[in-house]
Picture 1 (cartoon, rainbow, N blue to C red):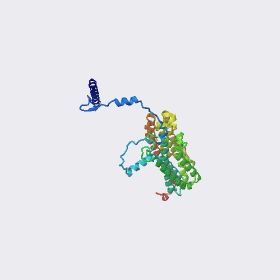
Picture 2 (cartoon, helix red, strand yellow; picture 1 turned 120 degrees about the vertical axis):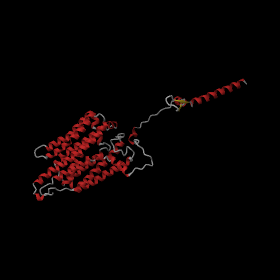
Picture 3 (cartoon, helix red, strand yellow; picture 1 turned 135 degrees about the horizontal axis):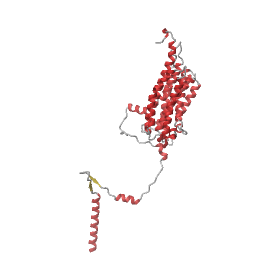
Picture 4 (cartoon, rainbow, N blue to C red; picture 1 turned 90 degrees about the horizontal axis):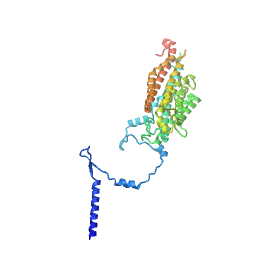
Length: 403
């Protein structure tokens, strides 16, 4: 009997402890600094159990998955959200990187102007201009450039380049707007369409126009395409100089002039090529950290920020040195020196580039360089037209003047 009472007391004591433990585990604690707000405590028993078990932690490499992961969008819309036509238009315009369009349009404008002004004469004061061919070249340049941007975004995504760089790629893949395969297909379609139209347009330019066009198309595709992307071999600036300088300018000149090649067109194309190389240089300075992380070789990533800024300074001054050689000598069109009016804009860009230590700021430097290229080319084209037409109009009888 005594044993039964002892067991009964033990059971009651155990039950009391269990109830007390349960009450203690759900005890409400009121913070002194927060009046009338109760915070439940968390029992540490389960945590102690997990710690005692000492579960094994296995680590697996995900390096091979880097090229197939898409960073989550910064803003996720609900599933029922539907973008308007205007929103999709803005998204695709950003994906095509339309702010880079002056790189390809300006050499077309310069090449067409050079070929046109050489046809000015007393019998034809306004010369002859092939408008249909000129428009076709513009269409070809736009299609190839936009296609190259999309192809570049796709292969950079595959290699993990610009994965976290919101200022670099167009963002169609990175923000999850369009599937990567779709981007590649559209990019190839644009590049192929531009190539076909270019083949037809280049008929009047002769064999050399086809050679220049082939080089442009190959560089556009293999700029980021495997197995050896040209942009990852430190050739970005050189390719930009060749394509957006001599190649496009001379190709346009050949088509407009009926296959005639001109050393004058080559020399005038050099400033535009140098500006294009400067734009790419500023872009690569901005992306130094991202390119280094992705093992992408660029000249600024090798030189570092300090010497890269010096390189930017040199590249921006070279176009003006070329203009001085073309416009100062006796008998040269001195009016082209009005391009020096862009020097204040250049000064602002240089000061910003030399004083900042923040890489992101070079995105603004890049945009400023594009504006300088645009203003420089327009002034150069106007100067060439005026310099070529004035001598012809001065010697014409008044009744033969076209205006």
